Image (cartoon, rainbow, N blue to C red; front, side, top):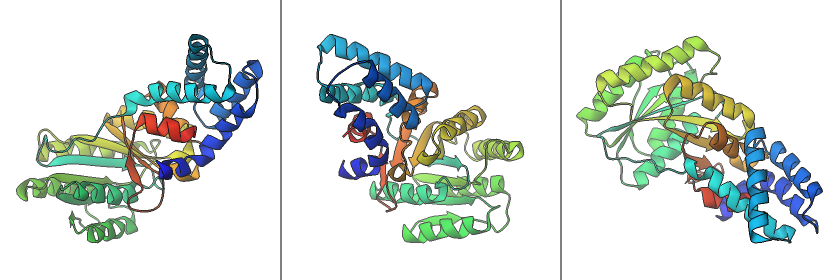
Length: 294
């Protein structure tokens, strides 16, 4: 909780300062609206939160601005609750997880952290280096494989779909619990690359009829509303099952999770609140809301 509070301080401070006044009036609501919009909560989610907050204030007959902050935390937690869902491993062997994201979002690093998280839960993991376009991607994933002492399937300059097929086949043969497929970073506007992602998904299904079991998108919390646009585009193309939201420790735009909850409620499996390997945390709506408004 302390790590989460520290990570969300930049976003939370701008919202919390609204409650330092002495009166609950139109000026407070206006300031709060501005603060939420500045935190990239988005117009729809901001309006929803303000309406919900006014209703709660009326019902509880609250008169203290400090108490209003606690009511806002409740409203935010309720809005975020549909995003709270655990990543389930074990229903399929292996559980095939395809990971997408734009370059710079922290995709490969998140895969490394996720590998560590799964290993600590006692799962055996196989990594697929299907990001064959970026020269350093394979090496970067290899470093994470060594650090976590897990196996990796890769080919120099190989076809991403072929690498993915080989990895899923190997995962089945070696009875691994999880196969994590690292796909090439791309922008949703690069249509030929989005088509390649769809191809990887189709080919993975040929290797295992029920796969992929999870399609995750890694988004950078710093990018605010742009992150919401990425969720929309990748969800339309791939039917996402979950999100990993990174770099929340360095951003004043942590409100974007509220925008996602309001407009495209794809579950948030993990959030990143620091550089360390253990700084990938499972998402809790209540904890997130309380830390944000601490």
